[in-house]
Image 1 (cartoon, rainbow, N blue to C red):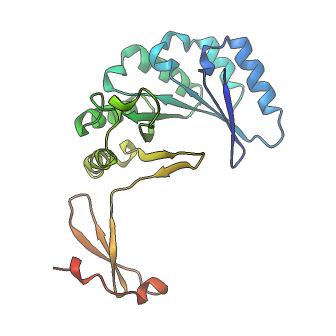
Image 2 (cartoon, one colour):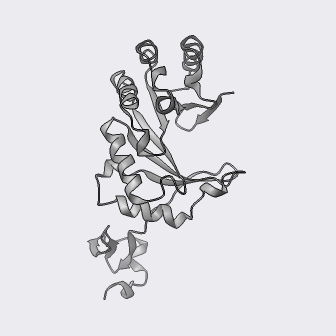
Image 3 (spheres, rainbow, N blue to C red):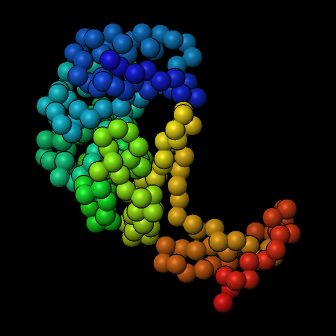
Length: 229
């Protein structure tokens, strides 16, 4: 069973059951009819196939997909060991077909819940032309307890990436809110507060900086003197 989600800004997201397990003919039938909907501006395919079955990404498939631009693809990666020669070739064929590629990674205890593994994965993705997009907190679903980590672990990993690699390699850490609340970004704290007309900012090294930002209601709030020693 495929899941079709109509997202604001007229994006139709096709996920799964993995849509790339369909035959080329059935997938093209679906794409053509979705693009026949007047208010659908572009499509996004969510898939794991380029990672687990890279030989599925054939020249015939990419030629077909190329006919349905604008088309984006979110690929699910979990570990740098998945970045094989075959996977790189599959992603290269998709990228050469003009399909922007983004990664979605779930934070998994014992699999990728440390800075080095995540940095190797994110930097490796860039080398095969996949932009790190989302790092998901593992959902509290039945059977997943052994994979779940504290949210603080995800924040530590993002802190271990920011400033220590290119910004292109830093995904947005998100929690998919229960009850249809959508993806909520979780960021390390960088805006410490305000002192008069200055914002107080903390960089990736933990150093504090002042940034002039006069005016506005926030400028009249109490100064954050405790951060100024």
